[in-house]
Length: 252
Image 1: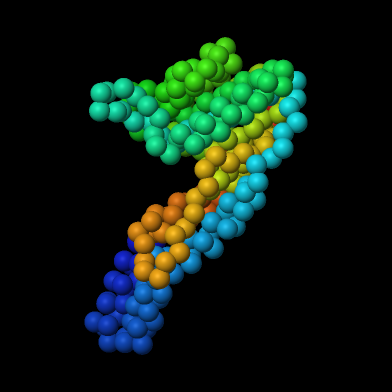
Image 2: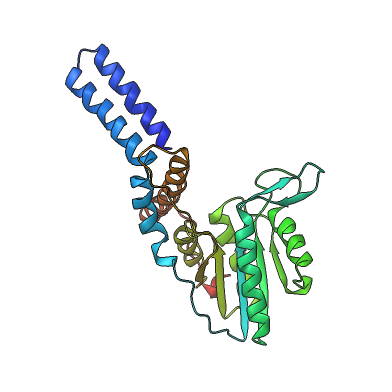
């Protein structure tokens, strides 16, 4: 995304030079340079991440209810060299955090369900929900405690398709597990479908400050911008009345 903007600015600057608009061309080219340095050296991603992840820095203290649901949002699945399906690399921190919460909930003596949400978005022949559930069972999670939502192809559908499962279970506390960068948007979507959640971060994304531009920072900036765009799009659609009707527990 940031590279797209850079390319547009450079092409615009070059086109303006051809059209003899030298001052305007210089502005576009200098903006491209500044954007390249601010992103690559870490200033822009640091600013974007601070607002996006800040509210989720501290993991919450949880008072378990009689009926609890831990919602694990998928982060991709893939085929290994031997052909077996396994969680994608970004998913492991989410799985570990959900597993830790599940064990803590079971130790409290309360009723617990671990819901795994994710369809076959990468077309590997198995849903993320099924792949993650198999991994969780190998880690000791009882199959009876797993709720699978295998249809969703994006975060909006994670919330839309999870809501009926959670309402049917009668969850009194819902913990939403995802990456810190993802929690603002995911929380917004779940609230839209009438699910009150407690957000719990798994991984924490960090820029790499350096005087020399780093490719890592461009990737981090793109991740953050993707989340901001998702939030802005939701608010725009909500203002225009384009979102699916918001629901509450009684509507599920």
